[in-house]
Image (tube, rainbow, N blue to C red; front, side, top):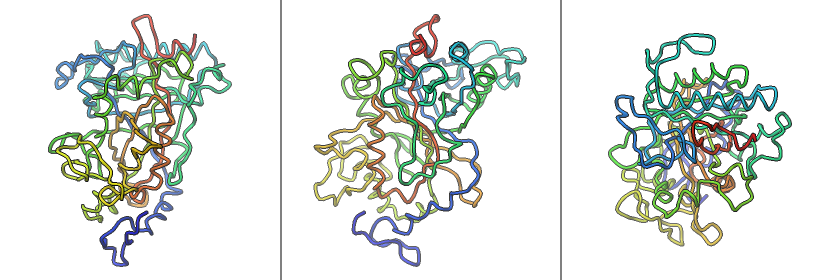
Length: 424
């Protein structure tokens, strides 16, 4: 922390930063009842094909490719709705696990391209949610695997991605174990919520007996207001730094996709590490903070997204002043990407959404950030989050769930399936 003054006894802000008494604020979350959780961020693979007529729901995102759809999308505009879901695998052996991934592939291939709705039956949700036709609606299905899948059950221990671990709590986390980790993750993104729900019901019905839902959450992505990247629930532009990857020459190969040479098993080529974090925002407390102080906590102007050091728009380069008077040393953007000799540059591909759930049992609104990002090395995110344990934003948020996963390589063609290179 800096030498700024804490919150006064009357609750007003002085000229400074974080109220010290807020650092004890998380105890109220312990012992509460947790509901479904989740997050998402999504788009499609590295192709120049744009969504076709997504407003009418007829636009289909290409399913086949070297990388899964739902991670990057031209023109880097995520669909406005998402569900993140995590599952425990209940398949009894390697053959049943292989069948599970075959089924996930065939259903995802159909759901993302659309067609006649399946007739009601024991393997169909039969709700008629979309009428007689399943519309693609820009749907993407992105499949990941967690560290727990590589235990003794399926003989995969020696094939685990080099950095894949089970997510554990950072200093300020209050994680609900029921909302964390899992064997398989599904990221579903689309333009409308009914398409997402239909896809989730379909996938659950088709894989019943092989995997069981562990946790899930709905996410939404607001429109640009008034321009630029959408805002998070704190009112600041979100995912601003993604342009550093998309603008860089070969940026996705440098920072997102796993490929040789390197320490990763050969089967991981074309995949990427995925982080999901469910982060509750304490909006009532945040709204007490003057806008100028909020900007100091983040390191950007709230309305425009321009860095406090100046510029013409939210994508202007961030230049840190050596004394930390303009952009504080413990501001969000400076700790996330210090740009020092020790940490010269940090690039993660963010695909985050916002969430809002039923009110918390203590009367607090349960809303916040369904954070999702992808990176070639999981350590990139973990190191960043460890630095952020000291940021001024800490009193205004509480991470409650999520997990680390490895997003599988893409499905090449009609003869391929999810996890083929892992299981053969």
